[in-house]
Image (cartoon, rainbow, N blue to C red; front, side, top):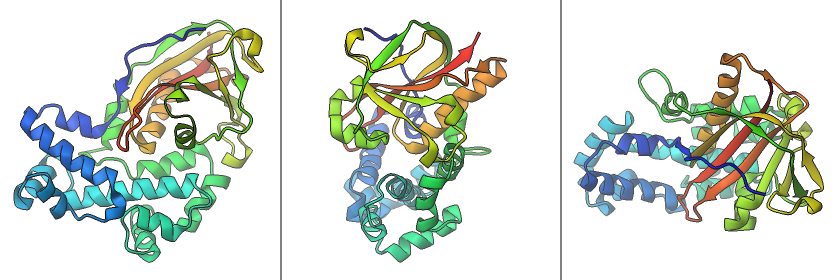
Length: 299
């Protein structure tokens, strides 16, 4: 069985900001951004990152602040918090002190102080939200760590250009993987490049429930029909293919897709499934993922 493919929409603020720059400046900023993301545990300060990127700290601070609408120090702190919140949500066995060190904080107290200032919550409260909170609540929390812009986050601005289309799909299915994690990052670690075989199916009528009450099925959709153990009924879906590198962009993209469905007057099929498929994955420390999001509607 083959799936419809389209060019993904890039929902990465850094790419959008760097795109207008000359190639030589792009290369320097890309090196600096890579250093900021790939080894948080090293605890490099922005001045060290500037020096390693062959830019004087003075010029780096000025150029970065003008381009990114925040200082390099603010950007680095925000990125560290994005990773920390992801680990707190997704890794139940990952101790807070270990998360702090992994994300470049000197101690669990330093991480706790940063979380309280940026999100108004403790690590314990955030971890509890990953169980008793709803997808909407966690999405709202993640958007507080989005890239700042003049009036709204840059992720939200970019999401408004997200191309969505109505597609009719025949009956499809997958071979259930009963022990597969429903956390996509764990899926990527487990299956690597074969993650493009994985489909996630979440009942639409459960999307407003708490995470502990949502039953997402994960399975291999690239199998013959005779191997299906979970069938997806034919029907219309509002779809988008989007390339992203952060939990924040993931949440914003899904929210925008639902907004488009509502604005165009379509009715959600509450008996259907939200479908998530990995179109492509870059198996690097800073690589992104192309998701296909498909939401069932009644036409």
